[in-house]
Length: 206
Image 1 (cartoon, rainbow, N blue to C red):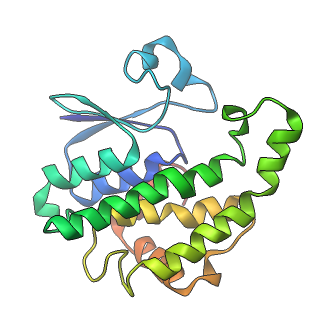
Image 2: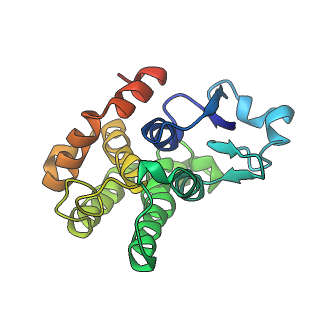
Image 3: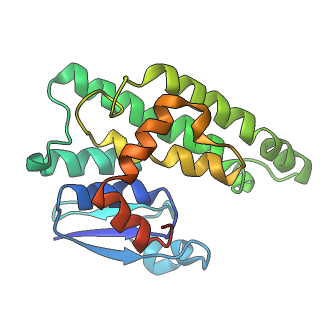
């Protein structure tokens, strides 16, 4: 039995969707970021980073979305969400890494600026550039992802729930995914899946 720690509306939505997509056997444990539960001693013993999501497996504790997503895909092969072959797997890792290290960080500057700066002016400067930076990320992804219907082509992979978060990140700062046809089509395809709808309902986002 896997144990999955999440906070409503956080980037944990991606892994949560994948767990449902592959019909994993797991226990979902809510950790409220707004309430500061992720910084409580009990949770920090599980993940000293104080970050969500976290996946506890029978063997280890896994943190960071790219690692969690790939683990779920690799251990639930009946779900066929792990790309086949080293080249396709490298492409999947590349996309997941970009979403984690570039797109998500660009979004985090909107409300987590204190991670990087102390001066109010510096935080406000970061916030003022979030929309531009996310637009740049969306423009890059629009060029890089396959014609679809999925991020890497005709087969749904563990990257797809992660890419799905782009629309939410953009919407928070007043941007629309509809300006990017491939990203918009991908978002619609994700919304049509039962796994996505179930998790959006759990997170109060439906």
